[in-house]
Length: 68
Image (cartoon, rainbow, N blue to C red):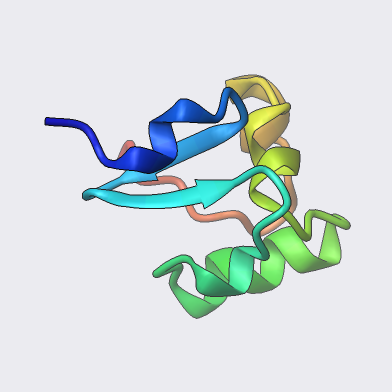
């Protein structure tokens, strides 16, 4: 069963926690390097991350690359 928050179209779910597009990235369990890289790039909300393509996210300076 899905959490009630899925009634909203602009909701993202991570491990059964619901976040709106306006939720601060500070509430995510990001590593300090990932958080700092996003903040320097002007990314402040989950919706900002969701709007990025994989290429745009990979182009953020000092953003960790887990593909290695």
